[in-house]
Image 1 (tube, one colour):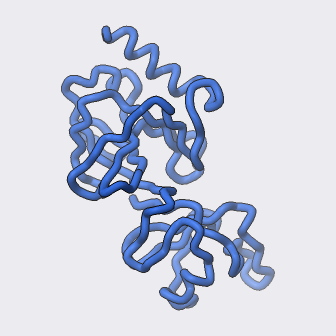
Image 2: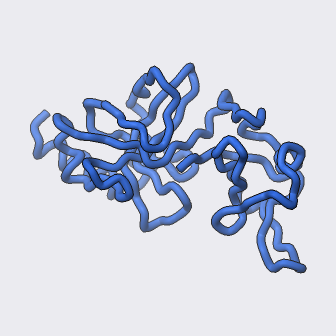
Length: 191
């Protein structure tokens, strides 16, 4: 495939609605025809990735609609993950679409990892679908650290367990949104 066609396809990936070219999972747009890249190690932030192909995923890691990261669907031990990548020596910024269109010499660094795979399990024993009450069994409520608007909780394993916005309730004493006891985890993120 020539470079000009790759650039056009990648730009379309950023601009065309999800229903037109793929399917949307949480905050991720995945090309439905793509096979995951199989990894020999579990994906972790800051690891180098030798994908040898242009990114096949677009994601907004923390509900920031303006922060768009290219990435990959990867698999480790039959668990699927989505990883956001940076290019070159600047690991705090997403790759630009023009840079990643030339996939021959990319130096990729994983910046964010997330999974909503039903088979994924944290060191705490939590999975997609686990209740907030299960989180508070492994971490005392006084030690909970929330991110964003209260939709994610930091686990000791380094993962963030995230809940749907609809499962958050406003605590009148604190003025903060927090998951209710029956709120279910719908994805895990590590940065």
